Image (tube, rainbow, N blue to C red; front, side):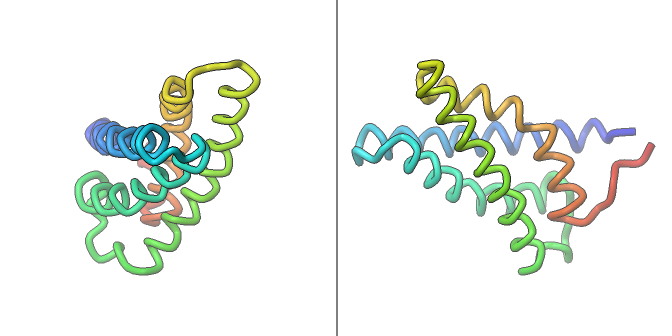
Amino acid sequence: MIEPVQVLRFCAVGLLSFVVGAAVLTAGVELLGLPYWLAYILSFLVTNLFGFALNGRFTFRAGARMDRAALTRYVLVNCALLATNTALLRLLVERFHIWYLAAAVVIAICITPVSYFAHRVVSYRLGTPPT
């Protein structure tokens, strides 16, 4: 069985991370004049450290598991997600003409379950949720 409190915490951290990421994305595009895809990558990287710290301490209560190896695994999982997210963002913006922030919201919602299980199992090595 999935731990509902842990899932809610993961979603809360994800929502907070998304707000931080959206702020970085918007600032990159609107204030710095960066291309949307470069600003998106920048926002993704900024939220990596933020999410690693909050998810490790608050969501998964990983404690001693939050070492350099865990950070490396976390970043590698997020690099795989970044590649997927960036391709999806480009598809939604350029082919379907969806506003870049709306596209980012759709991607964030869709990727959340994959991200939860990947970080639980790979990043923090907590194994699969109990059944």
